[in-house]
Length: 354
Image 1: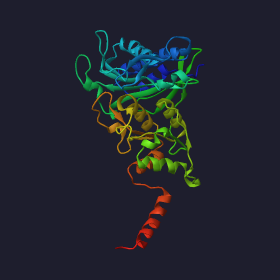
Image 2 (image 1 turned 120 degrees about the vertical axis):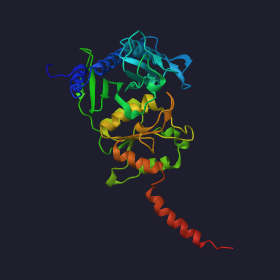
Image 3 (image 1 turned 180 degrees about the horizontal axis):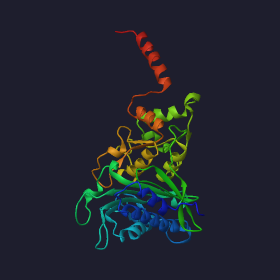
Image 4 (image 1 turned 180 degrees about the vertical axis):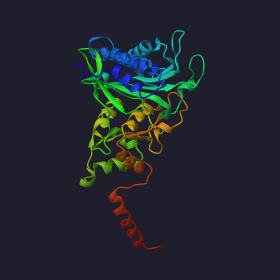
């Protein structure tokens, strides 16, 4: 046990890389880990208590609120807000900013998705929590909306917790990506995956092919490209889609591959939330050597205009994302397209002119 590293110890050791650090960021990361334990406690016994199903309410996204969504949201606010280390918070479940209770306000901003993938919870599928931390922009008093609306590249920390067969917390402060597995016998997150690195190219793709009819041609061609056999590029790829961003991203982070939630005729602006989902996982992915874009531009450079702004997301192994971008932008075609076009042109020349 002497060599085991708890998340609190690891955070303090990481803090040594910042000579001017006050320790406040380290403390609030510990707060997030504590909140995750509270959520995990209820997730694992959700079927035994009355927190499955919906509340009957609709959230700002126009979605039915799950009871466990509401519970997780309350636990994050209660478990973190009262410590006075944040000046303001924002949640996917709340329409506006969340003012921190009490008289003490800190210099950091917390944005979080309390329970990502909650539509799967009734079927006992893996779900998770996602968080993003910024430094405040305002000088005095409680935080403001503008403190929350910062570009992803200004994050000082980000992470997620996945509640699966084991509970794992993954985070970065810009010094690599580290994963911790919860040991329920001692109630501690222990370092299990130091310096996670995503492979440059994988053999997995994650996309909701149920929406294929709504996809634009570039994405349709990319899917067909992945399904073609080509030993040189390791194709065909295997399709894996859980429907929980945390679970899909976590798998690809460890094994390589690509996750895509593109713009489509059904969701022309994309569907995932920039502030609560795309920004934090993009920061983690880049720190692990991967790539994250909206198909055209780096996610971390996007200018947020609202708390609940949506975005397309292409994320995962660097080479896989770059190829997907070429298809999305119409810069790449299927190999059989290149053969088909000259044949079509030859047939057109045979048509007599009048």
